[in-house]
Image (cartoon, rainbow, N blue to C red; front, side, top):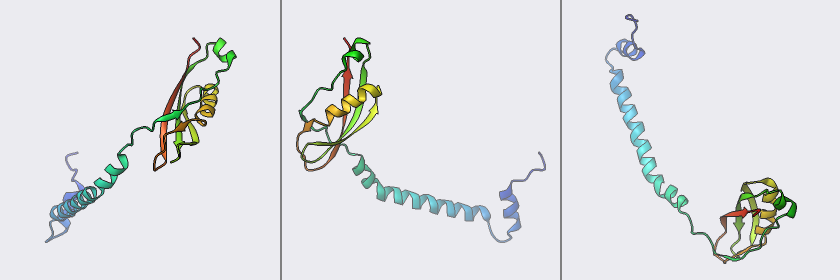
Length: 134
């Protein structure tokens, strides 16, 4: 490996009158400064998107149906849902995020009947429902 010469040295030796490392250094500095300026300009927009609204107050809840057979067989657990709530407080869509699929269907059907406090905008609310056979 003693005869190995890095490519940068070979190129800089072949360009008489030009310092390849200096040109590369200026281009790299320009690219970094451009990237930093874009980051500085876009950061307020990114921060504005990350601000979270407090959860909306639930006014009316409906308990999910818990099949007696599932309860007797000790099938329970936590179901996680995402409820899309319209400005008037009604639930327009429920997405199942996790949990036992048999229990999740019952939980989603119940949350579709929930009513939230009105707001001037649509929100997505995280909901967790626990099914306990005890």
